[in-house]
Image (cartoon, rainbow, N blue to C red; front, side):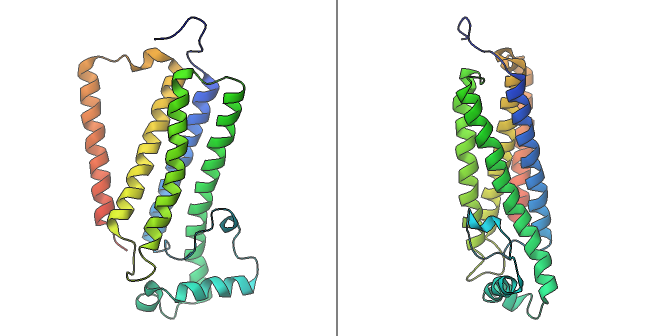
Length: 219
């Protein structure tokens, strides 16, 4: 129940959330391209901060390539690939990780500022905090997924890929839902009961189908 004088909606907050959702969507697309090009294991280390910088010179590229040569995917699938071919797959994975870092900054910094200036409807603060936490968890799950393909496999474990993909869709849906409520106010959630059930079933079916896609995705 909204208290008298309490902020009910904020178009600025809604636009921020929609922009974050667009970035998440872009990351899913880049992640799909990374998967299709077999690029996901090209970076064999997880450096949340320093990893934002790509190799800066030839020696750095040789070091990164040598680390990739030590994993099964190179030995069994890509043996003999050139440096140019390695750089091609490297840039896909690097772009995917950089986009993840960008999303973290684009979400966290405005969130703090909105809190300072009390610009977020109170009922949405906890939800936004949960979305921020899920974003951090997504980074950990991403590395958990990649690590499954560095020792005994030539690709990542499908169940870990599915977890990574599923959480991305949950974050995307959470951003859109929260953004719509920030735009329209608390009345946004008051939909006819039949429509709510139907929309929920459709959304659940689409989500389940996406998870199945993650399970059967190729290397």
